[in-house]
Image (tube, rainbow, N blue to C red; front, side, top):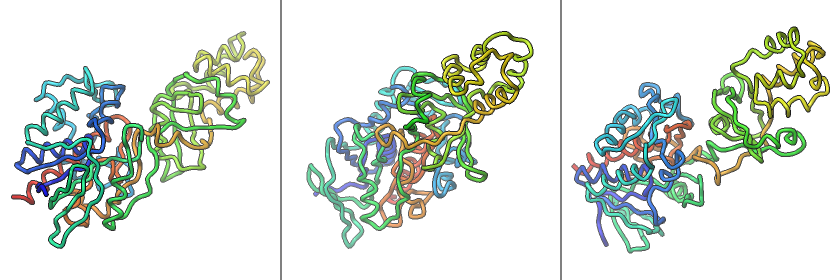
Length: 405
């Protein structure tokens, strides 16, 4: 039976980062993962360049960019390990990066640079990695020591860190292992569901838009009412099955099944004024005038829906123009569902933060920690989820180190 100071289950962003810090603080650390490859989610993120953090995160009000049953929970870890801290680590490793927009930072070359950095940090801490190596069972003895039955034999430790991620993208190895473990030790779960995910529509009401597949445009998108209302200004993408793009991924995390989303398809234009001006001065078809305000494919699809719009703009009634402006600036449509975990970038919900310490990420089961996506903390699109991985891992690693002092 091999003994370790800490055993980390999951060799993703949070698990590797936590292991590296804990190892460098003098702990004997073992990382276990059932997959052959480490950090697959980093590898495929950001188009292969890993959107690893976001400069716009406000450490004093970090919950602004995160969703949780208790949005304040993430404040402690995020304010103690900031985007600037992680940027400093990249710079020490000589990894070049750039900002795309809205504070989103990407590796210049490849996400692989980030993965190799995490592995070097683990090596610097003498971390042992067993892969692929599944965990068959975990139990805790009367002295509070955890015994794990693994594919490579039994191991023991006073501290176990669960960094197994959520249910998103099962083809790269996502499982519900972390949630099952939480339940085994009596911890509560916030019902998981897909987040940052494309939305689907079907039936006759979608047929006018099905041919717009591949079209992208900037929109204002919103869902919810009053206190629950949320809105984003981002790009929308029409797909064969529905809507995607940053706008839809963002709003999907706030959308409740059976409720509509509302879109302004021309957020930078004053449509009523523009159409009124066109009516007074133009001889063109209404669809041609509209194509100056929104993409022409969208204009074509839109005017097909009403005979009153299929004529020269000068001949259109004021009522018809008002109706057109309203439909384009407040298009309300109810998704039938989402593309589910296979296309979701993250998992909403997870281990209930009421059963975790916001300072250390230790659960109410002593010596058992949960970090990263397995916890009920989900960031916006744009590097926020990776920042939660780094910050929660850092808070946990410091706590592990202080316990062994």
